[in-house]
Image (cartoon, rainbow, N blue to C red; front, side):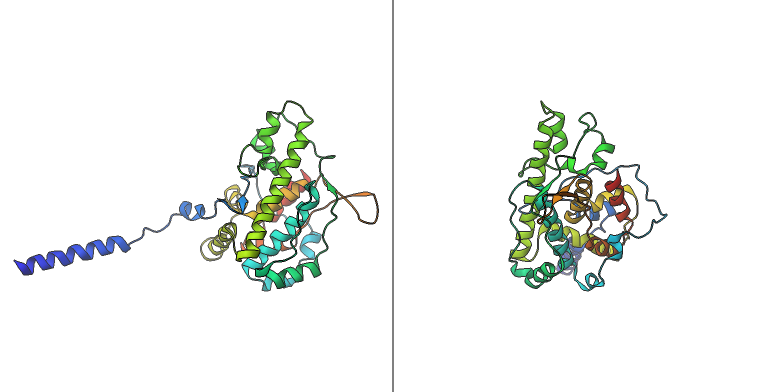
Length: 298
């Protein structure tokens, strides 16, 4: 009787142990949730809309200046350094458009050498920029997905602490058309502040929640499944800080002007980011660059 009870107990213990250690394989949907935007101390990644009818045009046009001028040095950088450099570059291009005195990144303990190299390589854009004088929007269309997709800045929040109201929502309820550009300035300022907060977190701690989502996505693309040129995968890319920033800056670049230091003349601003080439290569998603080209010309 004792021997039977002992054997029964061992079987039960073994079964419980197996059930506690067994993990059901992650589905693709569960894996993709790891790349969702997070609300954290770094800020909120805007939920950008993508045109569900978007199709990748496989016929390539001649290489752009952005692609031709991509230094090979970026290939030797680890994921964290290329992410930091890209975010810093994007932040420095948002600053002139924010109509505010956005602070510059002058010290960065965890990326000290990287920051020094950045300052040697890139000149800071002019501190005087404007996007409001040329920016125009059709308030009757701001709720339509296709219109939101071609104007990603409409998905930016006008509040620093919440995803809503977005710029599109604010415009839709605005009493006067003159309020539209006021909301735009508020949205850009909050977006700039969000990027500054994440850069500060990276400099002080060496990482951020948004970086971990980016790293997970690279690991997924390199070890499990390449990103495909379809709306679903493009939407996944836009859930990361650097791709969301690139979309917004590509769109705003259509309207932005910068005032040079030497003269009072305004010049058009053509936003390019050479680091995005390397990031797209690591994600096996160089096709995504064509999506941003369309944003610049819509």
